[in-house]
Amino acid sequence: MTACDTLRWMLRAAAAALLFSAPGVARAIDLSVESSAPGPRTVGVELVTSDGRTLRFPDDLAGEGTLLLSFTLTGCLAQCPPSDAIMDAVARKARTEGLEGITLATLTLNPLDDTPERLQAERARYLDPSRIFLTGHPADVFAVLDGLAMRPSSGEDHSVRFVRWAPGDREPSIRDGFVEPQELLDWVRSPP
Picture 1 (cartoon, rainbow, N blue to C red):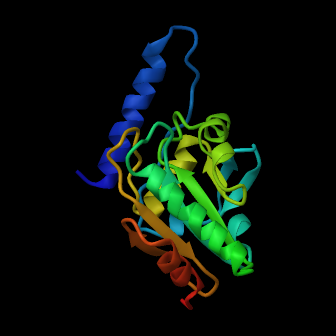
Picture 2 (cartoon, rainbow, N blue to C red):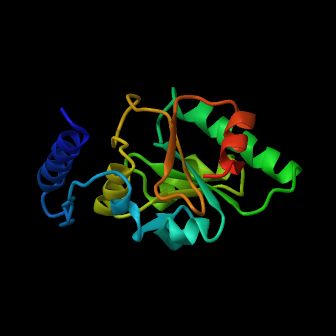
């Protein structure tokens, strides 16, 4: 089963859950997503921060600097806490070294449950304040995940991935698995 097949299955399941969960309560949401090659589909997609701001991915996040992106979902107890600890350590090291122009962001893998309020309550308020936590309309988040070849998830079964989007990069660079914070920071600083 490809990532696109998994995504389509999740969208159908979510739509069915919304339709049949509580009569009169369900609301219509456009959950359509087009499949595409990694990279281009992610550009210009609007996402929402845990404090309610709308940002265009990746431009409003990286600007002229480098974006380091990780992934999370609320309720995750296995992969997400170590990944969050790595991102927090990178944030501290970047501050200590006086590095500017690096944006640290974390995107949900489950936009159906991870609202801005939930990300704020369960992730952002406990972690480094310089980090940006992202969610948004499910179709928009799923488009970014698809463009970065990252599977959506609603449970513990997900990959650990870090994405670097730097000036001069023709497409994002990807590192899979847990990475030492210093190694990750060196990778972020390295030329494309």
